[in-house]
Image (cartoon, rainbow, N blue to C red):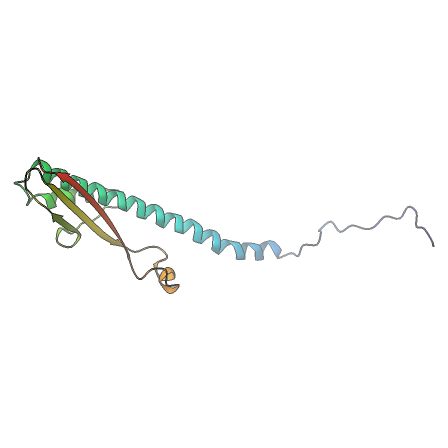
Length: 146
Protein backbone atom coordinates (compact mmCIF):
# COMPACT_ATOMS: atom_id res chain seq x y z
CA UNK A 1 0.00 0.00 0.00
CA UNK A 2 1.13 3.37 -0.78
CA UNK A 3 1.13 6.19 1.74
CA UNK A 4 0.52 9.73 0.73
CA UNK A 5 2.56 12.00 2.91
CA UNK A 6 2.14 15.74 2.95
CA UNK A 7 -1.09 15.80 0.99
CA UNK A 8 -3.95 17.66 2.58
CA UNK A 9 -7.54 17.24 1.83
CA UNK A 10 -9.18 20.24 0.19
CA UNK A 11 -11.88 21.92 2.26
CA UNK A 12 -14.85 23.75 0.96
CA UNK A 13 -15.23 27.06 2.86
CA UNK A 14 -18.93 27.18 2.16
CA UNK A 15 -19.64 23.94 3.98
CA UNK A 16 -22.49 21.75 2.85
CA UNK A 17 -25.19 24.43 2.88
CA UNK A 18 -27.14 25.46 -0.16
CA UNK A 19 -27.47 29.14 -1.06
CA UNK A 20 -31.24 29.31 -0.36
CA UNK A 21 -31.26 27.24 2.84
CA UNK A 22 -31.68 30.23 5.15
CA UNK A 23 -34.54 31.58 3.05
CA UNK A 24 -36.35 28.24 3.14
CA UNK A 25 -35.89 27.95 6.90
CA UNK A 26 -37.27 31.48 7.35
CA UNK A 27 -40.28 30.64 5.16
CA UNK A 28 -40.99 27.58 7.29
CA UNK A 29 -40.52 29.17 10.72
CA UNK A 30 -41.97 32.67 10.17
CA UNK A 31 -45.68 31.65 10.03
CA UNK A 32 -45.34 29.72 13.28
CA UNK A 33 -43.63 32.64 15.02
CA UNK A 34 -46.30 35.05 13.76
CA UNK A 35 -49.07 32.75 15.01
CA UNK A 36 -47.47 32.68 18.46
CA UNK A 37 -47.00 36.47 18.60
CA UNK A 38 -50.50 37.32 17.36
CA UNK A 39 -52.01 34.64 19.62
CA UNK A 40 -50.27 36.23 22.59
CA UNK A 41 -51.68 39.60 21.54
CA UNK A 42 -55.19 38.10 21.44
CA UNK A 43 -54.78 36.59 24.90
CA UNK A 44 -53.52 39.92 26.26
CA UNK A 45 -56.43 41.77 24.67
CA UNK A 46 -58.93 39.29 26.14
CA UNK A 47 -57.35 39.63 29.58
CA UNK A 48 -57.50 43.43 29.41
CA UNK A 49 -61.11 43.38 28.22
CA UNK A 50 -62.08 40.91 30.97
CA UNK A 51 -60.57 43.21 33.60
CA UNK A 52 -62.42 46.19 32.10
CA UNK A 53 -65.72 44.29 32.26
CA UNK A 54 -65.10 43.30 35.88
CA UNK A 55 -64.27 46.93 36.73
CA UNK A 56 -67.47 48.15 35.05
CA UNK A 57 -69.52 45.53 36.92
CA UNK A 58 -67.78 46.49 40.18
CA UNK A 59 -68.61 50.17 39.70
CA UNK A 60 -72.25 49.34 38.97
CA UNK A 61 -72.52 46.97 41.91
CA UNK A 62 -70.85 49.46 44.24
CA UNK A 63 -73.18 52.23 43.06
CA UNK A 64 -76.26 50.06 43.70
CA UNK A 65 -74.94 48.95 47.09
CA UNK A 66 -74.55 52.58 48.19
CA UNK A 67 -77.53 54.14 46.38
CA UNK A 68 -80.18 51.42 46.04
CA UNK A 69 -83.00 53.89 45.44
CA UNK A 70 -81.21 55.32 42.36
CA UNK A 71 -81.18 52.18 40.22
CA UNK A 72 -81.87 54.06 36.98
CA UNK A 73 -78.48 55.82 36.89
CA UNK A 74 -76.45 52.64 37.39
CA UNK A 75 -76.35 52.06 33.62
CA UNK A 76 -74.71 55.45 33.10
CA UNK A 77 -72.07 54.57 35.73
CA UNK A 78 -71.32 51.24 34.03
CA UNK A 79 -71.20 52.82 30.57
CA UNK A 80 -68.87 55.58 31.77
CA UNK A 81 -66.52 53.05 33.36
CA UNK A 82 -66.36 51.08 30.11
CA UNK A 83 -65.56 54.20 28.09
CA UNK A 84 -62.69 55.10 30.43
CA UNK A 85 -60.68 52.07 29.32
CA UNK A 86 -57.88 52.09 26.79
CA UNK A 87 -60.03 50.05 24.37
CA UNK A 88 -62.86 52.63 24.50
CA UNK A 89 -65.24 49.82 25.38
CA UNK A 90 -68.84 50.54 24.43
CA UNK A 91 -71.27 48.86 26.78
CA UNK A 92 -74.90 48.75 25.72
CA UNK A 93 -77.04 48.84 28.88
CA UNK A 94 -79.91 46.94 27.27
CA UNK A 95 -77.89 44.07 25.78
CA UNK A 96 -74.67 43.83 27.81
CA UNK A 97 -75.76 44.51 31.41
CA UNK A 98 -77.98 42.46 33.71
CA UNK A 99 -78.79 43.22 37.34
CA UNK A 100 -80.25 40.72 39.78
CA UNK A 101 -81.34 40.99 43.41
CA UNK A 102 -81.57 44.74 43.21
CA UNK A 103 -82.23 47.14 45.95
CA UNK A 104 -83.22 45.25 49.12
CA UNK A 105 -81.17 46.38 52.13
CA UNK A 106 -78.99 43.62 53.55
CA UNK A 107 -79.23 41.39 50.46
CA UNK A 108 -76.64 41.10 47.69
CA UNK A 109 -77.03 42.80 44.35
CA UNK A 110 -75.26 41.18 41.38
CA UNK A 111 -74.21 43.06 38.26
CA UNK A 112 -73.17 41.11 35.16
CA UNK A 113 -71.53 42.79 32.16
CA UNK A 114 -71.09 40.67 29.02
CA UNK A 115 -69.33 41.54 25.79
CA UNK A 116 -68.48 39.57 22.62
CA UNK A 117 -65.15 40.15 20.89
CA UNK A 118 -63.64 38.98 17.64
CA UNK A 119 -60.15 37.57 17.78
CA UNK A 120 -57.42 38.26 15.25
CA UNK A 121 -57.45 34.59 14.18
CA UNK A 122 -61.19 34.13 14.58
CA UNK A 123 -61.70 32.66 11.10
CA UNK A 124 -58.69 30.33 11.43
CA UNK A 125 -59.88 29.02 14.81
CA UNK A 126 -63.40 28.53 13.44
CA UNK A 127 -62.03 26.63 10.43
CA UNK A 128 -60.31 24.17 12.78
CA UNK A 129 -63.46 23.91 14.92
CA UNK A 130 -61.80 25.31 18.04
CA UNK A 131 -64.37 28.08 18.55
CA UNK A 132 -67.87 28.57 17.24
CA UNK A 133 -67.85 32.32 16.78
CA UNK A 134 -66.92 35.45 18.67
CA UNK A 135 -65.59 34.91 22.18
CA UNK A 136 -67.95 36.05 24.92
CA UNK A 137 -66.39 37.53 28.06
CA UNK A 138 -68.30 38.21 31.27
CA UNK A 139 -67.60 40.23 34.40
CA UNK A 140 -69.75 39.46 37.46
CA UNK A 141 -69.60 41.28 40.79
CA UNK A 142 -71.87 40.92 43.81
CA UNK A 143 -72.10 43.36 46.76
CA UNK A 144 -74.44 43.68 49.72
CA UNK A 145 -76.82 46.65 49.65
CA UNK A 146 -76.14 48.97 52.58
